Length: 412
Image 1 (tube, rainbow, N blue to C red):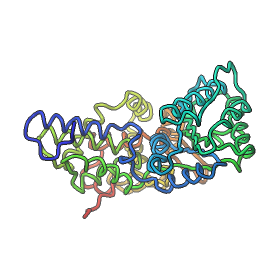
Image 2 (tube, rainbow, N blue to C red; image 1 turned 30 degrees about the vertical axis):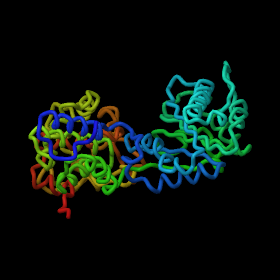
Image 3 (spheres, rainbow, N blue to C red; image 1 turned 90 degrees about the vertical axis):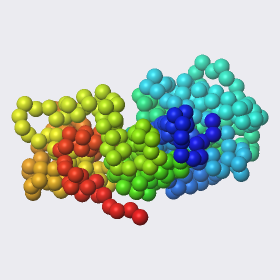
Image 4 (cartoon, one colour; image 1 turned 90 degrees about the horizontal axis):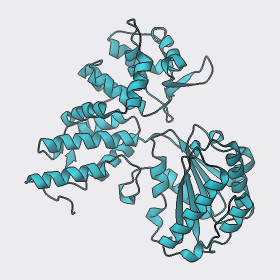
């Protein structure tokens, strides 16, 4: 169906627009290049690695920052000029061993080559009961000289078998030593490469580490504008800024809040999306939130006494962070004081931080560093926007404080 190019009139046209919005802002990883926003530096680094034909990529970061979307898209904008790309994706799982993972990778690469009309590039043998790194390497040596094969292994953090990780590291080293043209891109949730790659020091020359941090405000705005521009709808500047502020650098939340806000405007038969619609989207988000979020919040804040756990957790969610999402106790002082409407010190919530980063508080926060230089971030980054939206919905902060804490500013 074609996009609605004018303000809808009939109920059918409004329903069509509703379907458009739901499809454009579905929150799933992106596989359409025109909808991909930001990440130009990371795209360039991955492409440089692929074109060098000698190195491999480890792409890592927090859950929900867009690693899968980036690995889906980075090659597509050049696929018309670099026609020799053959790209296979494998989803790793906790049950995987080396043989299952890499046999599947060969099968997917073969299928991708056939689907792209490049079967001559990927003429492999199958039927191995078990497979070794050298056997994988020999199969991939059969790839055509002009081919640019890429194997993307997503969710690599789910692999539990240490021998699988060791053999995969050996395979990457063997690819490098034999100048195999296939590029391996390992994607996973991790703070650093050592959490994903066994003995990574031994293959340091063969890999390019690309950490993926949270998205900038401008990149999140681009996500909204690229999608909404395909429709007759538009967001006010304030609505965009509120969504970006609430998202805390996580593109999934930018899409989810934008979708609910746009659908609320459609219900009122409007094409302009305002802050009132964003407020309504917050209520819808809390209503639809996963049970896991609700349970983690309950464990972290439960108590038989008045102790301000909810307020301090909200302050943690509103604290300024670095690019990796970490904050210090000092970063919590300003939002905590604003929420309680009086000047507070670290001593007023220090025990709360220790609780939140312990079993007692469900480890809702992850702690890094020693006693004097501790930093914290949400163990599940998706919890951070949830806590903020829940705090706003429960009126823990008034409208004045909300504007300050979300760093709301007038946009052109």
